[in-house]
Amino acid sequence: MKAPSWPVLIGSTLALAVAAAGSLAYRLGAFKEVQVERRFDGPSFVVSKDHMGPITKSRR
Image (cartoon, rainbow, N blue to C red; front, side, top):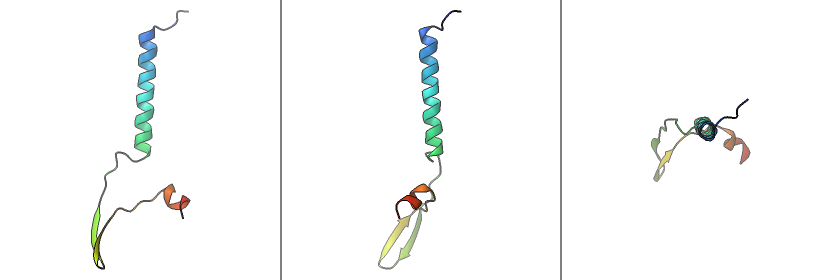
């Protein structure tokens, strides 16, 4: 059995790395739309975005 050539191995590794990075970015929310809410809260304006996820549980 003949081993695959170097360009095939490099291309396959690169494709796997790009797919893994894209999957990770998607799972972390890199492609989600951000909706900013502006409201008057006392003497200043507050600009915020609601966040739901593990960070809200781990640092309280």
